[in-house]
Amino acid sequence: MKKMVLATAVGTMMLGGFTPIPLSNPTVRQVEAATISYVKPQDVEVSWISGDIVYDDGSVSKDATKSSQFTTKTSEKGTLIIELKKKEYRYMEMYRDPQASEWLPAFLYVQPYGFDGRDQYAKKVTGIQKSDFINRDSVENFTIRQVYYIEQPKADKKYYLGGVGTSSPNSYYIDAKFYPNVDLTKISKAERSAYIKTAQKGDEIPASNVSHIGRVLIQANDMVLYNKDGKVHRKLKQYEGLRVYQVQGDRYQVGGGFYVKKTKNTLFYVGHIYGKDQHLSVYKPNGEFFKKFKPMENVRVYSTENGRYNVGAGYYALPDFHVNFDR
Image (cartoon, rainbow, N blue to C red; front, side, top):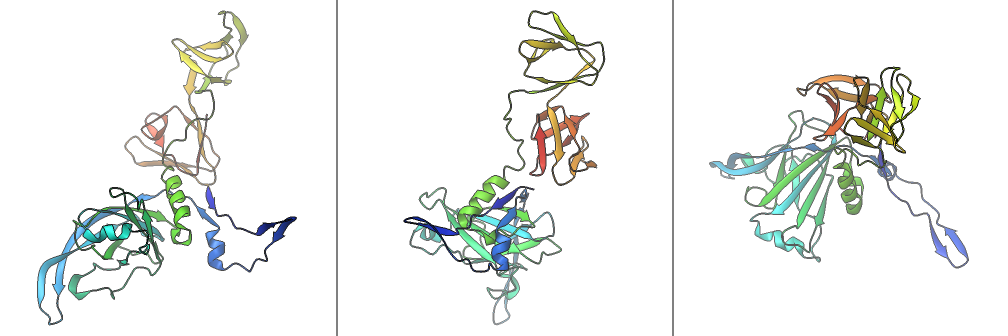
């Protein structure tokens, strides 16, 4: 599993050589922060719900306030990241000031914030949160990234944001992602940004770093390899595989001017996939789960399109950090 490794300074350069710095024993939190496994972020459903305001005198205003609701796909520990961009919230500009504290007083609550008399003292999901101010030099792109680690996930998977400007749908443009089973509050803003950028590429098929485009599998003993002059170079063995550099009309170019003719006994595929340290899941054409393949068990890929590895007859696998693709 791919991991993010954080650098630790252990010495200083001085005239005449390297002087080691005595290291204190690391805390548990420092050790845990040293490596964080990359995980694919989950989409989070963002919605607005209405509720009653209950005043100190007991009077009630029905459906007089709103709360932003964040629903994760799974009920598990992890990091909820909420990104806020200005819509109409007038004080957003204040946070762009480089002299302003890089912290937004917006908290994650167990129940809808502001409903039924609940205020800032209501029960919070977590006391562990970070604020990252991004693109402070841009009015349009200034973003406040709120980072919350959920230690005790809720069964209903619903969480609520409360704080400055969070009771109006007109305050912010909101986007949210959930990173299961990792705590991204343990790392710095720069490390968090790098982690998010890499993690979001986990669902992309990696670019090829080889010159061949696939392979051709020989499925009978009567096949031959031709040279650039069209003469037979040698016979091919059944189940022999050759790298393919180009597909031209009725032939597969396999390098050096040699080629194999397309017939019913040739099978072209673009490579293999396998799970490096986890099972590889394959899905049916209708999206239903089909089968898990053991770690390091190869599955042939016939094409890559629409962000999928097509493994035959409409069945497919999805790219992920633990899925390796070899051409």
